[in-house]
Length: 77
Image (cartoon, rainbow, N blue to C red; front, side):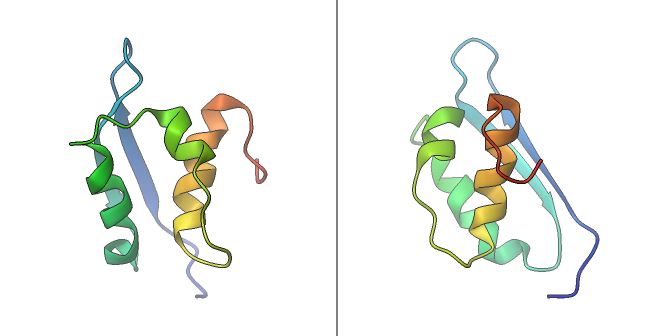
């Protein structure tokens, strides 16, 4: 996509590790926000999102990599 800027911020409850919100600043945000929006009402834990299979190649892989980083399992560090 030739884009070099963007950011993802995911808010997580410290006790339950549930995803409670997200902010995205990127060109194709509309392709990513749906995945994170469904996590909030379903009380999805970070590890659940990190271990969910993501289609390759897609932009949603960026979300998966992002949540894997604090778990120490990200492929792209």
